[in-house]
Image 1 (tube, rainbow, N blue to C red):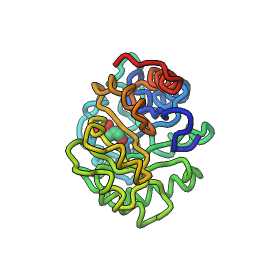
Image 2 (cartoon, helix red, strand yellow):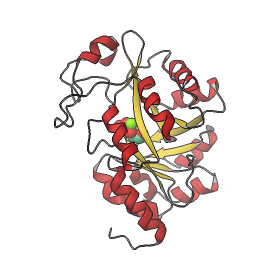
Image 3 (cartoon, rainbow, N blue to C red):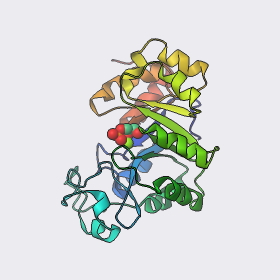
Image 4 (cartoon, helix red, strand yellow):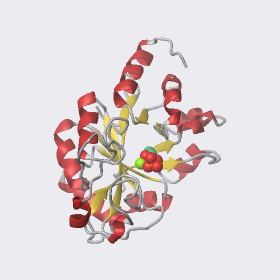
Amino acid sequence: MGFVKEDRTLVWGHRGASGYAPENTIQSFELAVKQGADGVELDVQLTKDGKIVVIHDEWVDRVSDGRGWVKDYTLAELKKMNFNRTHPEYKRAEIPTLEEVYELLAPTGLTVNVELKTGVFFYPGLVEKVMKATAKAQMEERVIYSSFNHYTCRYVHEKDPQALVGFLFGDGIYRAPDYVAELGGNAIHPMISNVQYPDFLADAARLDLPVNVWTTGQGESMLPLVMEMGVNAVITNYPDRMLKTAEEVAKGVKQNV
Ligand code: G3P
Ligand code: MG
């Protein structure tokens, strides 16, 4: 299955199956695979020694037993920390490199949405390194890049016009589908609430832009509704639940939302 839906809305695990396992860890991605997700979303940053690590925040405090910026630690130092904090029922979880996640996912056929976290630090060289890792893992056809930093989105396309790039948004962007199409985006990755804006989905369809929505947890209850509205993919912390919902929506079972 590619990154454009066929029979039903695609389900991508947000930071893996992060509702159940420590986010952005091998355990979380393994679980997303086991639950049957069509893809996973993950976030990347650079270490002090220039390695690509999979972690959402620029700092380690929320998700590990360490303190401080990711960029101030070497990979070896980060590997000593325990990244189980969002799910302490897991005794130990390591921060993975992007290469380690690719190694796990390469045989599975899952789509990988690599979110380039260049909003706070620009991480010179991150895009080049990530694209090199993608090519080395022969994952080019299965990776879709995204970023809230649209300069980064454009830069990916400058480096490789064939790369798939989704433009990420929070809320409040006026006529976002037109904006993304103008910038040559391959998909639009809005926070779920964007679908309420006038003509949002119709404009995306007119412009042939797949809509891959994400939530911050609370929006999960709206996902069945946006599936009915025809979005391409949902990026969810609970791939198992949303796969079930996607099947039901495809079969036309009335959703209780
Ligand atoms: O890529 C979708 C989503 O992950 C964007 O928000 O903050 O969870 O990275 P965030
Ligand atoms: Mg993300």
